[in-house]
Length: 234
Image (cartoon, rainbow, N blue to C red; front, side, top):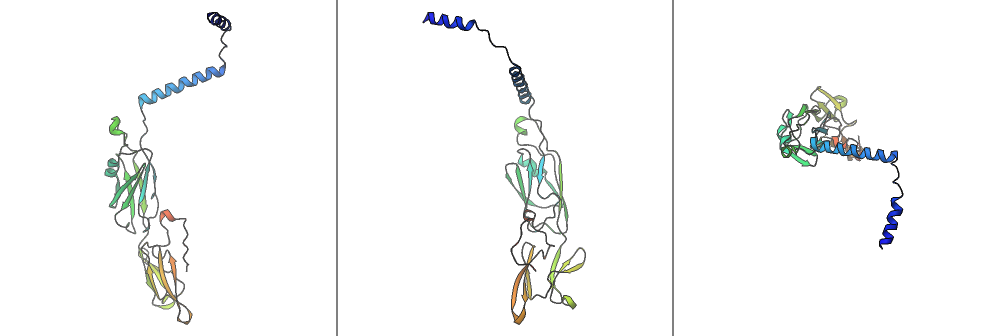
């Protein structure tokens, strides 16, 4: 056994180690650089400030069908600091709910029509601020949204408008026809998007149809802008 070991050692000791190739040196340098970068990151820490990535009502015209808005952040937030520092003008009381990086705010009552709103958030911190002792305040955020002017439906009583369903815009003071023929009765839906109308046809028959956008001018809720309704239109 000893004789075999000596023979193996003699055979291998006589062959010199192959020289390093450029690829070997490049791999070594890259590994060293990555090690240094990781060490610096661990020593200095993450300096990224929290920001609002998305505000679902930003620049939108909010309608009765829009029940809540969503703020999305780039990192987990201290929820109490966000809820305390979120400001909406004019005031819009509501309740908060959270899911990961997303915060939803649901107004307690429908958003009043005919108003413009501003939303601001500052002095909020990420969830790890208390644990690390490094307060990283949110980059101040400001957003805005509005609601359409108020309007109501009524039946015309004079001239060519007699019996037709009309929409009166309180902001402009103007009326616009909603149907092109007289109706027997109508009932707006609760979302302000449609009105159910009863139409008198030939031989005394009465039919019904749905008028989309009768009350608030035809805009769908923000979440449903692309959705088409299947009801018959007038």
